[in-house]
Amino acid sequence: MPKMIAPDKGVKQTDVGGYRYNVNRQGVYNVENRNHADAMKREGFIEASMMGAVTNAENIGYTCLACGFGSFFKKCGKCGNENERLETDGTVNG
Image 1 (cartoon, rainbow, N blue to C red):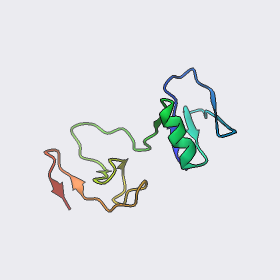
Image 2: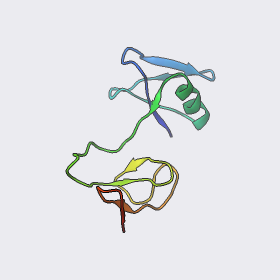
Image 3: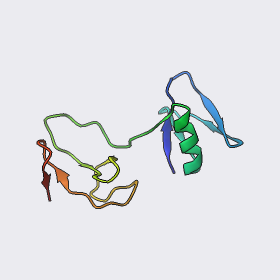
Image 4: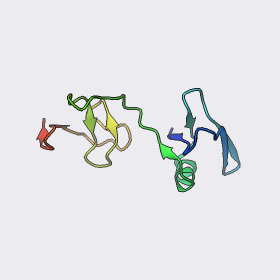
């Protein structure tokens, strides 16, 4: 289920494909299907990254080499690609 964030905090709900989405307490919309998420992207919404905040000094987690999604898990939760940890200089370290 895609999670989307509105381009402005003032947006409290949106209608897509006859379905009304309401924002939760964290400011995230839990979208029912990919087509609705794509329609929301065209209107300026962005897909929420569920990766926690990391500091620049640490190399925590994985960035998917196929789609760019950030995760704490080696297998991408968005596209299923198996990833390797990237070093700070951009090289791959298994």
